[in-house]
Image (cartoon, rainbow, N blue to C red):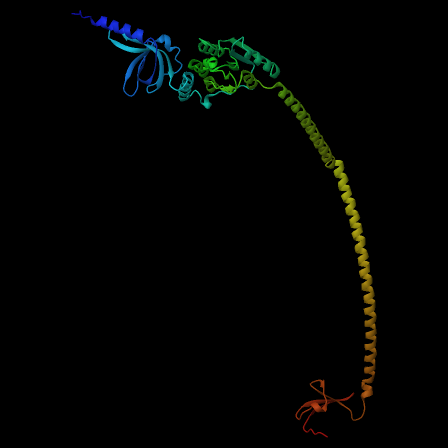
Length: 417
């Protein structure tokens, strides 16, 4: 009869069997029951349609995990089976975890980008404006890389007046993110105008330090404007989104940060020309103003006023004399016309009077009473008016007048012959 073994022995045998049989497994499943422990270990399970298995990733391996595990996420695990003998539980000990169907770095990038965007790290309203003429720029980059030499060359030709402070920084590999973060924090204390953090091109792994959250936090918390200048034009890093300005390359960062001295030289030439033209125009206008004022003063001087009044008096005198002469001439002409008219009229009147006098004289002579005194002839009058016998009626009282006598008669009889 076999001797029974105790539980600990059985669990130990099972542990030895499983751990030697499943030294390395590669398994795919969906994350569930996820716990990030304070110790730094990660406890979770993976499952498929019908089964589940417990998993653990210890802190020593979690530092290589580039992305954040999430419940429901499908992943692939490289690891081995281990047994916790005191409880008789077996679990999958994870050495490496990758997102299923997607690269770990790509997923970590998207996860961190979404997280920081939700926290407002990318808001345009918080981004600072770069100074137009920076006096001091701090460079957070490698002291031995090609990027620093490129930046120096561009600065020398573009704006040699600026002062550069280089903080030699580890920009790739283990600990690069912490070094970049610390360099940015230190640069923020140097009272600089601009901080440029970056490096030259490389693979996504080489540039990855600028995708770390610790670097994003340092950029976000800095008080000094920061330009992110990492890699090439096609490379977009988390630091690019958090920084105040993104530059395509380190050289481009210098072009963005510094003004172009040649443009300013041309601008100064333009200002000088504009100033000269403006000054000439102002002087010309002032000269014209002085000339006009002088002319106006001369026009309104006492001498000119007296001359004007004198000319007015002369003009009035001349006009008066001319008008007087004209009026006198006109009056003479009128008088002459009147005289001629009067002479003609007087002559005619005299002639008419003479004719009338002659006529009256003739009539008088013809009608003189002495000549009318003929026997048998008298004048008949009625009411002191001469009338003829044709106008006399029976009963009329008439007067019969001769040169010597007047007889009053009453008509008693009247006959026609």
